[in-house]
Length: 344
Image 1 (tube, rainbow, N blue to C red):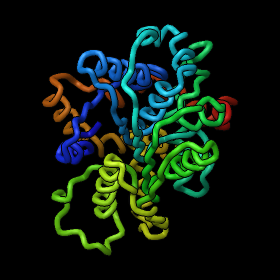
Image 2 (image 1 turned 90 degrees about the horizontal axis):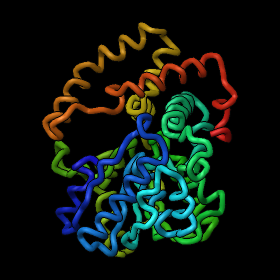
Image 3 (image 1 turned 180 degrees about the horizontal axis):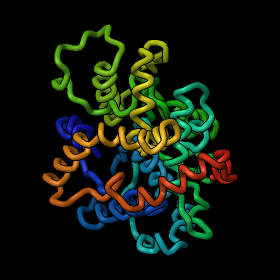
Image 4 (image 1 turned 120 degrees about the horizontal axis):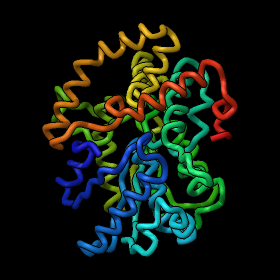
């Protein structure tokens, strides 16, 4: 969880617990989910927390919905704890999850693979790589590798669920995932609010003071989305009605912003490495990482100053490289398990 994402809620008087969960591909599904559930059990046992709200963004946006589903549906918890990876929470007690907030989460495994156009192709490559890293290799896989909210909804596994607030940017390459999740929640009559904003990925929590000038009410871009989203989440936490859906249109956002949004997602997930290799061969990858060298070293320095250790995820991880090379080989020469989302 980025600190700026939660700072507005601390200033508003809420107590915030931020969880550092294990990352794929080193720790595939369900390790992150089990880690979050362990954290919830710890808060209940150590601090007596009886009720709380789960909030997550991006990958965390899906993770909090999975945790809410497992805690709210005992049969899912029982199924999960039947696997060795989750034995540690078999007898745990959890706080009641009163609300859940998912910001631009990857909530299904189909919408990101079916979009058309250049942006859709960028998104497809990044999403497939995410799924390849995250899915369990165990046989049988925990929860049958149903690791997204829509997986559980489509399987009819969710009977109870806390009130959910979905928010997403219309220029986000994975925007359709929130749309699909909202439709599924409506189909199963589960309480939720969905609101879209004229922005790309990752807009929640940026303070007003970070922008160079005052934000006019007429602004229909990233700064306005940042401010409105904070206010809407705070209204949701106070059980106030969230203002009507923005209905921001994709054509309100410039082409360059949409292309950047698609590239940004692939950059963060490792998909840009795949794209450069596919287009330009090994020299494309070399050029990309020479360009990223300063940013990478700067990010590592900040991480070391904050955590007193080197980062061990993403491009710093051996497992990242062990996963990306077979993935690229399958992309070039084809493999049945990667031809459609239905096979994940």
